[in-house]
Image (tube, rainbow, N blue to C red; front, side, top):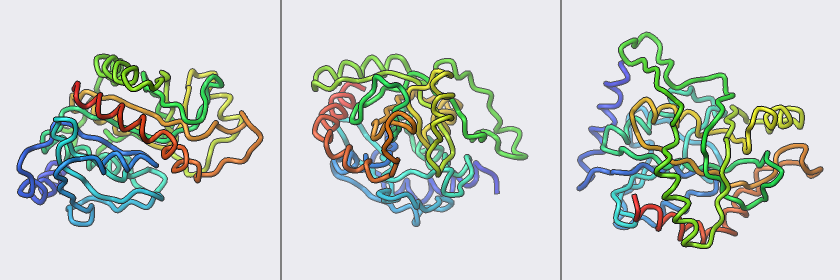
Length: 271
């Protein structure tokens, strides 16, 4: 079955349950699923109900779409994202984004939990993504024999500068400092070695994570405006002697939840 046919089947299940199409797609990263809890008049659809959606396996990812209104915007939030390290192809990871675009979303706000590479960063910082490095060895636009769907999008401005300016203004209003930097996406699930982190720093990366690059590439190919945000939940390997573990994510996100909620509300109101 073609990609367009799969998208149409998923859309046919979702669209009758919506009164108004979404304008903004929000992908909630690890520890950030609580952002979707602030959507008004929510309509919730589990991934299992939607044709061709994969189930999620990462801790803290609920695996559902939440539609509704947030700060005056019609929103669809992915409360739980797919990852390559779960065994998904790059194309499977971005299929929900393609469906959200088909439903009407033209702006993407993608969030993630990341490790800090830049030694000026601290745990609890939020980084505004200005660019990325795709070090996964995969690309979501390699869709096999469906040649008519190939895209060669310009990635020079994949992260929309106007949205970054609005994010900086929203953060200032809420008294939240925003870092800015380059995100490097790796496949995982193992954390990086200290040698890899040193190499990534030389390349110009400021934070590292196991998501986001596929969604940003796909959004660029679809002509969407994109804003990327990384919550720095730990410093990457080799910066400190402490071993790395995934448990910090929820703890750090909880610590800054109030400022983050204020920031997102101000940002969405200005979209």
